[in-house]
Length: 328
Image: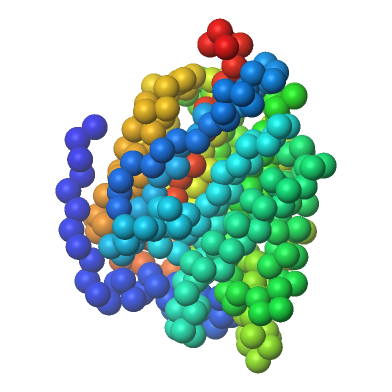
């Protein structure tokens, strides 16, 4: 597909987008890319049984120029992520820090990163966790974060997806406007729905200073929408923050991923995920492109100049595989 020409946005437009996504209720006034090694189970883990597993690739781009250590820090701007494998489950998560906290001198990405780190820790250290209730994982991770003597202040969306290996079933818990979709035979088998208080004001988990608690949104992890979906070898799972979904139409995403169903090579999955992220990044800077975000703004009668939405982008792309298929 030919690249779409893009132009840089005026500074005023950047500020417009920045203020749209705010933790404050007042916001309802509607006011690099280096490739990342994919992650999969070790061969010793796989050889213990022939249960399905996920071949995973993580890619992302920050809205602003990124630091060299950003990827190893599990952050892309204000987004964060984690991936984990246990003997019974594959676990993935993405979180998008709510940017309005910048106006209060708070790094929005730090809260998102700590939330994902707590969820990852709960998955790996809880011997009873088998992937069948990711909402409980989100509840436990958020509880660990809030129980700290000096909790990290901020807000974040969260989307967790887990594969219970024994029955090859995907379980998800989504709160806010990050999300996931499952692709089979070139079609979307299932897609998550956004949870929002209003246009571009997502449900969010929050830890707020006492004096601001009455002026910020603070949703409960129990409010996360859960789903259960049997998977088949070759299915693709796309887990991403809204920076991807707000800029890349579903049809274009399907076209870009059509050759990756059933892929077994890490480098192929990695390259495919990178192409998707780069296309979303390109479209986010195109002021004339009719993006999904621009169409949502129109549907909500929100004045928006049109074009893409400059934002951080995080993508976890996973392919369902069975070890015995490869002769291991």
